[in-house]
Length: 420
Ligand code: C6P
Image (cartoon, rainbow, N blue to C red; front, side, top):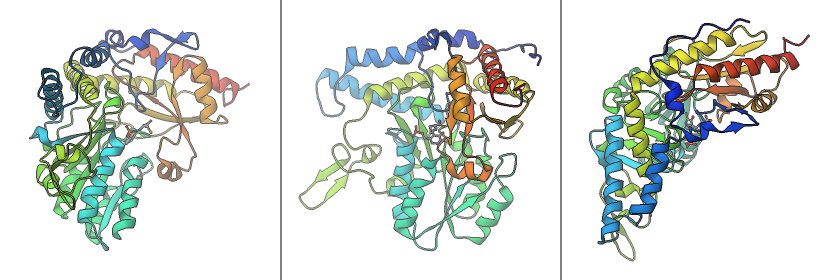
């Protein structure tokens, strides 16, 4: 098949790539084409240096000391929170709670808000697009409270069935809608603002799983109108082990703590305790200060690249990939075609298991993920057990896509429709 002419890129991904030291290494002796950023992104020198500098120059526990280092560490932690609030346009930085990752953020909301506000007869609305992190915590809270789970299905292109959603809102006592902003498997960008408007009209709150959106597009919590949002640092060029749960202040203030321990209390007596103000009420124990500092550096890095440019770069790269992949005999591509698709391409090849595809691609230096992508209900809905998935980010170039396409053609000639 012919390779389309390279498009005029306004975004210099090759220069961005040079900011990521790990991308200078080889994999299996080949040029590394890292196409698994939906799982976790690589880190730029700027983030690595920020973490390094924290441990070299400012490391101490926060809030507990009156000495210079502890003051410095506390100041950096607080600044990082402010930086994250600006990133998502949160009205108040105290609404940004540092957690370990998206999973912990969603567990926090389900456990704290859910146990306080849900009871038998209430409905929790989820979608078949959800990652397990936005299903299992709600199943657990449903078991504890007697609330029911209702799922909004997708159409054959992988878009949410908004007609079904509206029907559920009309028929059930919906208290909470927990929905992904971008599907990690299909790349579908859900109409979150519209979902929220409809939920609020029905008297429900909205919890957004933004693990795959905050890293890739400008996400403004006030513009979306949502009530809670979860995302992970490691998917946005930040460190592993830190994420954010943002929530509306009035809701957070009315919620009980999620975990008990140091830092989250005002007073502790033998038989009861009282709670600290936000955000400390939800941050029990010693926080991951260096990771918060690294996350703030990541937010600065992405903001300087520009979210509009990042999004345009990913659209252009995804279209470039889809244009070539569509031509491969025996390939099945998943997900919607159009503006409501992020830089995620799940695919299958006739006659080849996704794990075989991924391991042959690995031999060519191409890193993709194969499996159920922590979305087993979605796999069942698609009537597959697994897919192979390539996902794109700021440092990916058309050269990465070409390497992917040529490697898939090689797989196809061994296993699939391309076999002679
Ligand atoms: N998806 C993927 O390869 P954590 O692991 O807590 O940082 O993120 C969980 C999570 C929640 N929601 C969505 C939409 C996600 O994509 C993920 C993580 C990775 O697709 C690992 S399974």
